[in-house]
Image 1: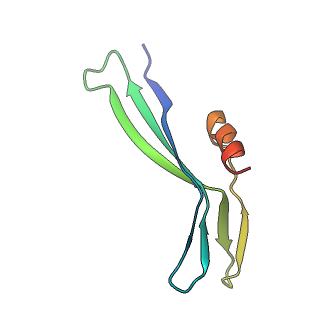
Image 2: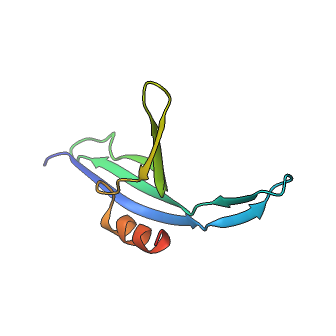
Length: 96
């Protein structure tokens, strides 16, 4: 048989938007954040050293800030096109 690699979304956590006032009296808003956890399993029934399991996480913010060579910031919506469809659906609700 052939070697297989399977990646599965195993956990999603949402940190809700929070607002507070700092010591200078300024109102601070922390946007909602989506945390996801994936498990990748590599297996080959003919290899006694397998399966190999790797767990990794990802944190997504509503916006992404990039900087040009002069240090000017550009803020844009985070591109979710490469994320699992469930993550995209949840982001559409959480960040609406």
